[in-house]
Length: 95
Image 1 (cartoon, rainbow, N blue to C red):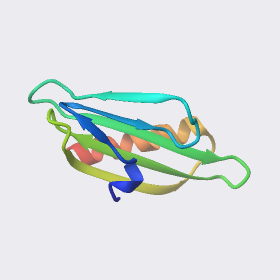
Image 2 (cartoon, rainbow, N blue to C red):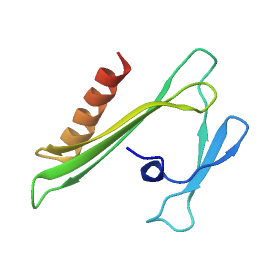
Image 3 (spheres, one colour):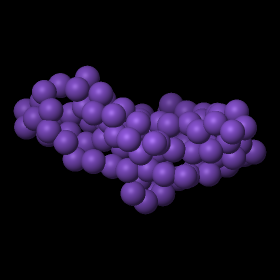
Image 4 (cartoon, rainbow, N blue to C red):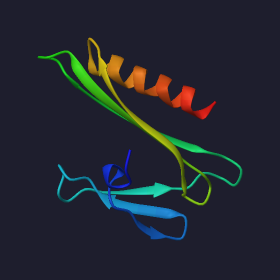
C-alpha cells in the first residue's frame, strides 16, 4: 500500500492532519500513541449489492512513522463483517 492511499499527511510534531476526500469540510487529527506503543488504524468498505469489500490497516509508532500496513480485497455479508475481518488482518500484521 502506498502512502498516497493513506492520504497526504501534513505533519506537525507527532500529529498528522488530513482531509477526508468525500467530506470536504471535516478535518481529522491523528494523535501518536505513547512512547513504546504502536497505533493501529483500521477501515473497511463493503458493497452489499456485490458482497465485495476492501480493508486497510496501517501501523504507526510513537513518532508517527509507518511501520506496517496492508490492504485486502474481501468477500463478506455486511459492513460489520468487513470491519471485523480488517481488525483480524491488523492483529495478524501486528504479531
